[in-house]
Image (cartoon, rainbow, N blue to C red; front, top):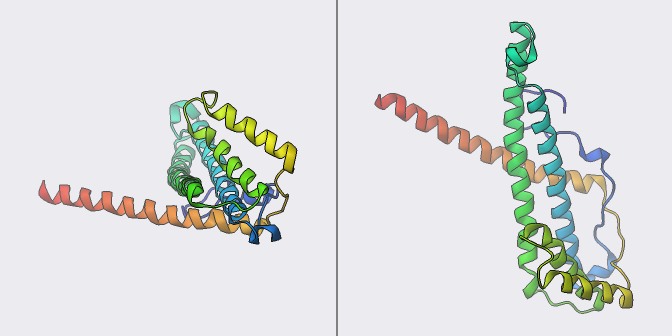
Amino acid sequence: MADSDNTTTLPFVIGRQRDEPDSLASQAIDSALSRWSEWQRARYASLLLCRVQQQLEARMIVNTGIQVLTAESPTRVQGRSARTLCRLGDYAVAREAEVFAMTEALKLQDSIPVIAATSLVGVIAKLEMIVGADRDIGDPTDFPWPHIASVLRDLKAIAGGMPVGRQSRERTRSDVARHWESAVKLVAALEEEDAAEYRGDVAVS
């Protein structure tokens, strides 16, 4: 990401991503399919934001801004230090944005029990979401996770896989930007809260 002194700037990474499944005409028949599509979008957004966070973290590790480690002139080190602080702000925003996206995906997973599938494809969609949650559990090899995955494979062999759709990059950008904006507001509020507490400490002392 290009250096910036504005932490509200969303890193330009979405345009390089491949298209992902999105809404399908058949989803109007089965609400489980619609919920699966929403979950796919939320999960994909969280993966993109996680990638942004990792990129920013890697750049901060490479450029510490410490003269002894960078072996550069004080002027250049000061400039790099300012950019590192900027990246720290971006990193905090990216981290919170990922949390917002993942929380949305988890809420969609939590809604599975109240969603009634009206087709085999809808049942497959619900199982896809359940099996997809194995990244959030301790050991996906424990009962009943391999067994659920086995049922999912059997259903796909009988009824076929999930319908394939394509999501526009504009939709992906919109999803990520929404979480990014929420994260910017949260980080700004936390910083203001810390500043207020600091001002109070200074006044007391």
